[in-house]
Image 1 (tube, rainbow, N blue to C red):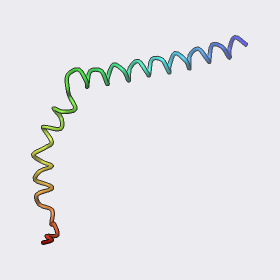
Image 2 (cartoon, rainbow, N blue to C red; image 1 turned 90 degrees about the vertical axis):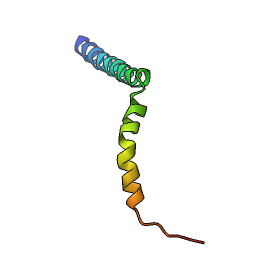
Image 3 (spheres, one colour; image 1 turned 180 degrees about the vertical axis):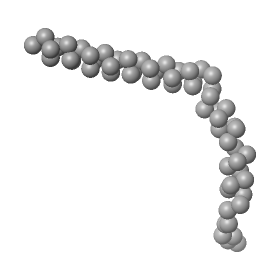
Amino acid sequence: MKKISALALKILLGIVLGALGFFVVTFIIYFFNLDMKATSMLAPFLEKWFDKMDRKQYL
């Protein structure tokens, strides 16, 4: 019985640490606004890509 509870405790501890790690990473991304900084760095490349695409012109 103690082996099962020790295994359950290890699994629960792993889940809690994983959730805490996920929270810390997402909080850092939010706090330093890293998603918008990455988007602004990618914008020129994406604009070039989409400007080269052929479009159908309808009048």
